[in-house]
Length: 180
Image 1 (cartoon, one colour):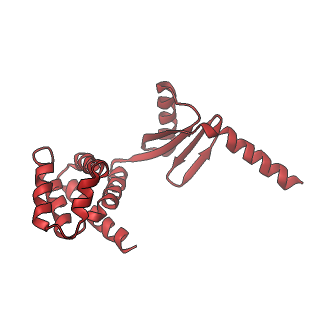
Image 2: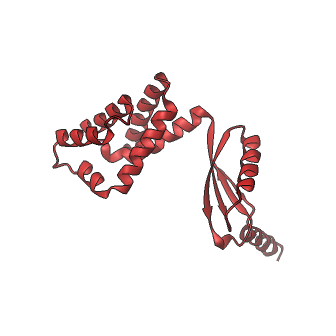
Image 3: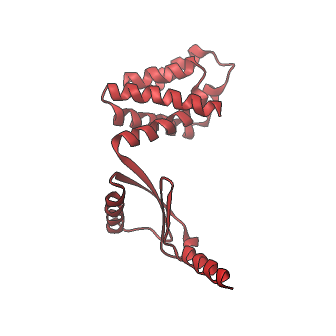
C-alpha cells in the first residue's frame, strides 16, 4: 500500500513537470518506452533492483541507456528514482503517470475481447460509437478470446458491456433459474 502511494506521488510530480514543459505526450511515450525496456531486459531490472550495486554505477548505466533519445526531464526523473531507491517502483509509477496523462488528454482506454479479430472498419465504427458515448478519445486494447464463441465484451473504466454469446447464454440461464 505504501509503495502504491509513493508511486502515485512520483508519477504526479513527473506529470506536473511534463505539463509545465508542455511535453505530456512525449514524456508519456518515453516513460512507456523505458517501461518496455525494463520488462524485456531482465538483466537490466535485476541490476537496477540490486541493493549491492553502487548508486553511481546505476546512474551511469541509466545515462548511457537514455542518452540523446530522451528528454532531459525524463532522464533527470529516472536518475532521481535511482538516487531515492525508487527504481523498483518504476512499473507502478509509469502506470500512474499514464493514467494521469490519459485523463489530462481526454483519452479513455477500452479493453475489447472478441472471438475473432475485428476488421479495420469494425474497429473504426466501434471507436466512433464509444467516443460518442464517453465524449473522450478512445484507444482500443484488443484481445482475441475464442471462448466467447461470438460477440464482444467491452470494458471502459468501471463499465462492462457483455455482448458475447457466452454472456447471453449465462444471462438466459440466470433468468430461467430465477423463474423455477
